[in-house]
Image (cartoon, rainbow, N blue to C red; front, top):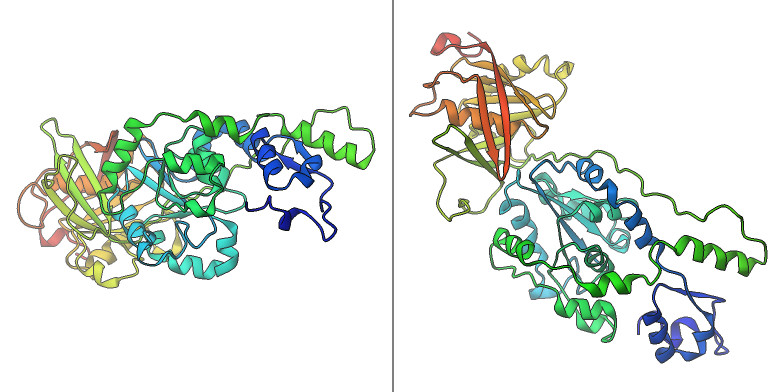
Amino acid sequence: MFGLGPEWILGPGGTPIADAMVFSHPEQIDRLAGSCPEALPTAVLAGDPCFDRILAARHHRDRYRRALGVRPGQRLVLLNSTWNPTSLFGDSGPDDVLPLLLPRLTSELPVDEYRVAAVLHPNIWHGHGPGQIRLWLDRARRAGLALVDPLDGWRQALIAADVVLGDFGSVSYYAAACGTPVLLGADDPEALGTESPVAAFVRSAPRLDPYRALPAQLDRLLAEHRPLDGPAELTSSAPGQSAALLRSLFYDMIGITEPAAPAVLDPLPLPPYEPPLRTAPLRVLTRIAADGTIAVRRFAEPRYEPDDAEGEVEDEGHLAVHEDTLDPGALESADIVLRYGEADDPRFGSPRLWAAEVLDRYRSASLAAYVTGPRECEVLHRGGLRCRLTSDTAGDPAVHASALLARLHTGPGPAVVAPAPTTLTVRTGTHLARVRVTVDREGTGREARPGR
């Protein structure tokens, strides 16, 4: 049994190498008794400080979600892997699902309905090096994958998650203990003690089918999820008490009087704000309802033409590309060119100047959109319309630029054939946004184009 066998915890003379071995649940001490009874006198029951920090910070869930750039109406899918050749981020040969899974996570899941983040075991980072990890995940990161700090950020991401897609590591088990739905993408019964709680959880947890559509599997997981009693009960027999139990143990071993003040754990820090920056080309599907609501669904580098929830192709589509995309060729066929930045950034002159330059350079583009904040963007249409889009809720205003393009292009041809609206109602998944359209200049024809 890994970590509890005599070869791990007994010295050359057959005596325990530790004065005290801390366990979080009596079940673990029972397993110690079976694997190495000589060390049983050193066993101490003192809870789980890691789990206690998670429990104490759950009321900050909304803050952690905002720190990761999760917007209203989005689901946060947390990908996690332990450190093992058969883990999700391991190398299990032809059965390795990660190369198949990564591009699909960011291409099948609509970017305005899902935020995807990854937590990798610290030994993965240490073993391969941060540069190699970022290189392997570069394409997924350009499509919107967030890499979470493996030491200081994973608990906050776990609290923020709606779904955890993981393996047989401790993060998946902590997720189950918190009541979060878990979908297993890799398991290895031989890596776990057959009688351990983690092994029991792995045997019963839902499995990812890497060859089936991901949205349908996530929908089913959320609809059918019922929190398991085992992980919550077996993670710690003294939830919320580890600080007091551990401090009492430490001072007793030192042989000095314990302080009178309460024993506490450091609270989880608020992670830095890391909104998604997608520079991968976005396939955008739009549909205008009878009441004028514009439904927008965006997909990062999809391998195939996406379908809507009912399996039918959407009404209209276009290509939106960030100016810093890795593939400059995508800009040559873009319908919308995007840029995110401060309105007064001197490197671009101004949003207006940038937009005029972009439309002059990329002749296929109908719209240039400069996003200046979580609620605003400035757009310039090739037909002469220049306006500011302002939303009533924070999000990615680039989606509103796509909605505006869909509204304007109600007929054939690149010119503006519909009058500029004063407001837009934009739906992404279940989220509705009201967008005010402030027109600065409007015109059609050659004389109204950039540079004229």
